[in-house]
Amino acid sequence: MQQESHRNAKPVPLYTKIGWIAAWVVMSVLILMILRNCMTSVKYGSQTEIGTVDSYYQLGLKEGQLGKDFFLPGDVMNNPVLRKSYTKGYREGMDARKLPEK
Image 1 (cartoon, rainbow, N blue to C red):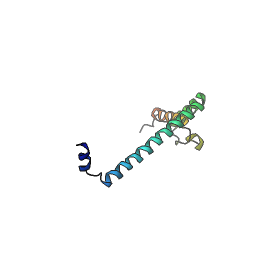
Image 2 (cartoon, rainbow, N blue to C red):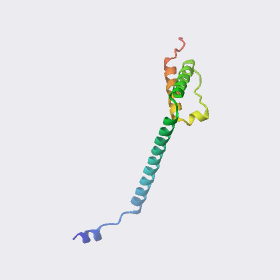
Image 3 (tube, one colour):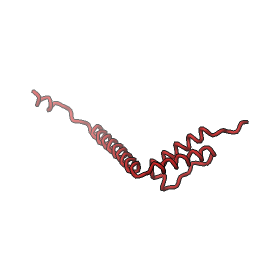
Image 4 (cartoon, rainbow, N blue to C red):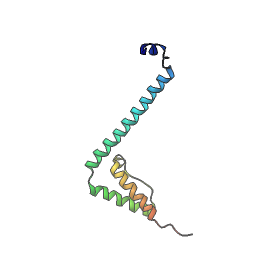
């Protein structure tokens, strides 16, 4: 009885098979990107000293309060820990900045 149901089953259409393959490719790429970001964060998180992270936060805070443009050297932009610290300080500095009254 079961063999008869398999014989009568319609084959899976080509566009469905292509859709499955495309979905697996997209999911694989997303998983690889997430794993790469996790490995990079762990690597730089263990190598970067806390004092350096704090100094970039203070630099971002000062530059945000002064209203300077957001700028970091290229080597620091590759370090996600320092980039996040500077960005957080810069945003808080911009928020704390007093705008001139009209």
